[in-house]
Image (cartoon, rainbow, N blue to C red; front, side, top):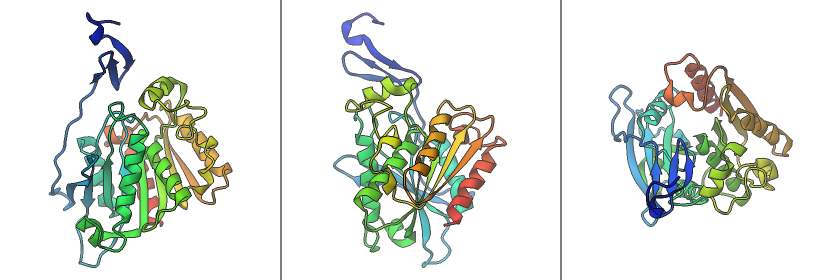
Amino acid sequence: MASGTNSNEIIHDFPPFFKAFKDGHIERYLTHDHFPAGLDPNTGIQSKDVVISPETGLSARIYIPKINGPDQKLPLLVHYHGGGFCAGSPYETVLHKFIISLISQANVVVITVDYRLAPEHPLPIAYDDSWAALQWIATHSNNKGPEPWLNEYVDLGRVFLAGESAGANITHYVAVRAGATGLAGLKIVGLIIIHPFFGGKERDEMYKFLCPTSSGCDDDPKLNPAVDPDLSSLGCTKVLVCVAEKDWLKDRGVTYCETLGKSGWGGSVELLESKGEDHCFHLFNADGENFRPLMKKIVDFILRD
């Protein structure tokens, strides 16, 4: 697999994500667009980008719906994007469109976290960034945190965590950590787990490259919740798991539901399967017939809190 010189030799190739070269540099197969923050003229939804930690560069994008009165406090949805822990961002057009649609129907504030990507920042950095973001959000519980939109418009007693693919994996991890260690300042009501990545032999080699300390999909609690001693401490009261019929990750998502049911965790879990669909279709086929049922399920899940 050499391309002429030793320094340009490919030592790992993980399409459709990236290839790694012997000299240490990474070449990604896909590049992603950057949708600017600002006012959405069709909905009145506003967004802006904020820095959570200048030391690490951890940042996020915050969305607020059109506010009706100064005392309106809305639920908060904390979102973690997908991309195999090594791609994606909160700033992509496809994600922006999904978030706008969700806010329009659920009337929530959304913050989507720009955690640092592997392999340049090896796992578990993405997990630690995601946890740090939730801790930062919790500092707004007395309405004196660093971000005015969170102080003014958010009810931290009604927090939801959500993500797709790798972001769904992170969502679960953060919720378990919140429940096991305690996180004063906010209450996580529910998790929205969309097409979750919980390992699988097909991606085991890639995950262990991204996370050199991982033992693989069977023994690593981040990939196999069944072996996590803290699973029953999951820090919420309900979970919605969405899977897609043609997604190779579907079985792991179904198993996740079953594992939660047997764990001793006292909450409720719901499963939605989108027939005829593949992984993360909701981002790439928002005009398809299965998008609306998925969105309705998510919105109803939020509004039932």
